[in-house]
Image (cartoon, rainbow, N blue to C red; front, side, top):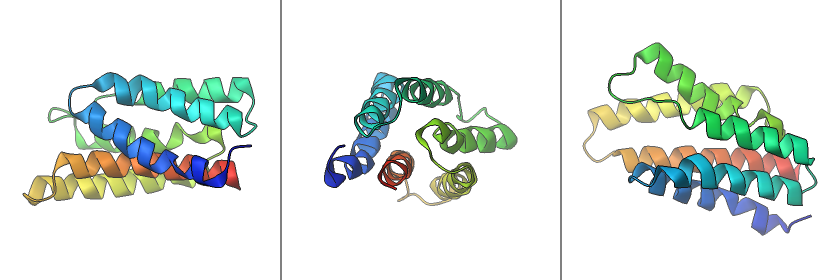
Length: 139
């Protein structure tokens, strides 16, 4: 089992991978981040198959678009999948709804306020995923 602080570092690593991925280096968010989650989960005792399933669902959800041409319903669905994709890591079902509500609120802020940029949204999304997995692995 990893030390508690090492597992909680997923919050910062997630924020970093999402921020770098939003800056053009999509591989950091779509591939590196899911690998970090799966590797950490296995070090915490999650089975190889569950970790591989988690890696696949997270990576798959991060390939879905939520850009300017995406409708509101689809965008809420994608934001929800960012939470639901964490289920193989033991994250509760309600987390998908929390992710959707939080990310929708932050997306709305980014559309209305000049100081609230996409970088804040990306950092929050990555940190939320990291916090969800860390708390699940440590409980």
